[in-house]
View 1 (tube, rainbow, N blue to C red):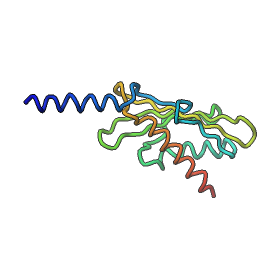
View 2 (view 1 turned 180 degrees about the vertical axis):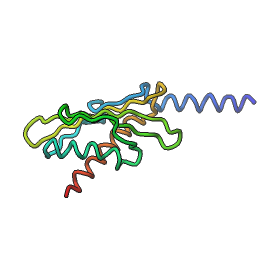
View 3 (view 1 turned 45 degrees about the horizontal axis):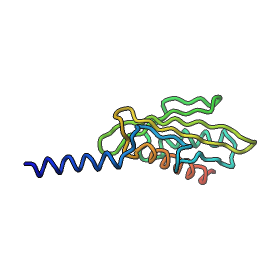
Amino acid sequence: MYRWLALGVLSLSLLTACGSSTNSASTGEPGLDPKIYDAPIDQVFTAAEKAFTQWPRGRGVLESDRAKGTVHGYSETNLWKFQDDIYVTLTEPEPNKTKVEVTSKGRVGESDFGGNARNISEYLSTVDDLLAAKP
């Protein structure tokens, strides 16, 4: 019995050590750079919205405002179906260049085990693919 208890405590300790101590991530943090695209903001905005239906874990757009350059969508984890809110902000630092910043925040729990950083990377990769496939 003590062997199983020790194994459970060790497993929980390892999971806690490997996970993030927060339940959110944002571009600008180490390893998560904002993206700057050589494209007009309208074109990138369209891709940013569409990415929520093209990205395998994306579930849809909850709110978007083209005038403010914001998109709020959500994703869902594969196994437990936890939902994370994804907030996207688009700005135009110079003509025909668009900067995309993303924040991913879990709706439940205190730790994300790297899931929010993964959301941002996968989401931006999907935006990359959509812009590369432009008609």
